[in-house]
Structures are given as C-alpha cells and as structure tokens.
Image (cartoon, rainbow, N blue to C red; front, side, top):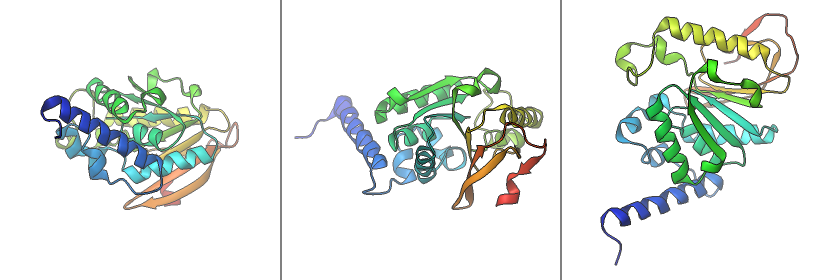
Length: 235
C-alpha cells in the first residue's frame, strides 16, 4: 500500500522533485513550465509567467554558458531561484542569486534543497551595491528593473522600494558596472535589462524564445569608445 499522510506526501514530492532535476539534466524529455512551477508556493506560481525565467530559457542559458567556458554565474534579481536551480540541475556550473526580497530568498533556498542542487547554488538578500561583480565570470538578467517602471498594481508586493526613480538609478548603475568589468565576462539577458551594453562587448549568441529573446554578450576590450549599444538594435 502507498504511504498516506504528510510524511508520505513529502517523500513522494521529494522523489518527484529529484526526477524533475534528472529530466532537466538529460535530453530524454522537456520539462514544462507548469510542471516546474508546481514546486512553488501558490502565490509565486501564479506570478511565474511574468516574473520568473521559463524552463527552456534557463536550460539553454546554462548550456550556452557552459559551452563558452563560464564557471560561476550571478543572477541579478533572482526571485524564487527558478533560473539558478534549473540551470544548476542542467549543468555543472555554480550559480548565485542576489534578490532584495528576503521571503523570495527563503523560497529559493528551499527549492535548491528540494532539487538536490543546494551545493551549487547560493542565494542572498541584497542589491547591486552589495555585489562584488568581479567574483563572477558570467551574469544573467531577466529584465530585473522593469517592475519599478510598471504600475503598482502589477508589483509582486510592497516589501521593497520600487518606482521609476529607483529603477532608473539601478539601470544606470548596472550600465556603469558593465563598463568596469574584466575582459572575458559574459552577460546574458532575457528581455533585456532596460539599459544599454557598452561597445566594449561583442554579441556572441542570440535566440528567440516565444516573444522574448536571449542575448549573450562578452567583454572583449578593456575600454570601448564610451558609446553604448542598445539591445533593441539586435532584435
């Protein structure tokens, strides 16, 4: 007879989560968004389509990064950890996420343990000012500053400071950060990040995923001309 009650249900969920991680690792079948999002709390599951990276984008990103020689990847605005945990399950890379909402970091930590990738993922509460970007050889952004430009009705919650002024400041800070990074760093964006890429970067790869496009850039010169490249020029 099958196990009943909370313990039996937890064991069944754990087995299902590990099977999901194995599927992400292999090529035997595609993991659907709804299948993965079932691991999230109900409120975050409902918001996933707007806020969290689709499964096939995260898998593709991990394979691009691995093929391009990355080893340690930072997700800027990591939310519930969907990108990091999927990409860690699909590759041998190490992923870290920085996120301003503490309750989302807690969800991400639980998700990483459930999928068996906690040894290669780390999440922490913070913002751009708290990050040592030189510790990473690749960065990932799923338009993390866009929420601040949107109507307050579409915000995840009011747990952090939001609004156009904060979003604009974060976007400009990240543009400056990109200009200061070392040669060789890769930057992946899905739906952009709201800003521009310094012309010291070269576009390595680009692919459409539904209505969005993922771009992979690499810094190839210490200094550019001071000009920026709009991501829209490549779409």
